[in-house]
Length: 97
Image (tube, rainbow, N blue to C red; front, side, top):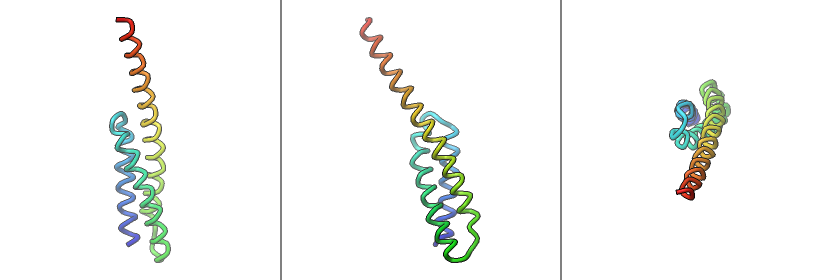
């Protein structure tokens, strides 16, 4: 059971990292995917270590998950700030016309 969680966590963390690198609209999807991948990697790593098997894939998923969460958070919040700034600029232009 732990090995399946580790593989799933690794794959989701990798997908979250790729989506976060693509940026903009993909960061909206990347943030929850990378958080789920991170959580599954942690849970899978605990179960694999408890059964005495090697936990390399869980560790890789954990590292990729952390990196993906950081990147997707940065892109998510900076894109949100850009959207808010563009919205306020547009509302300022509507007052001039």
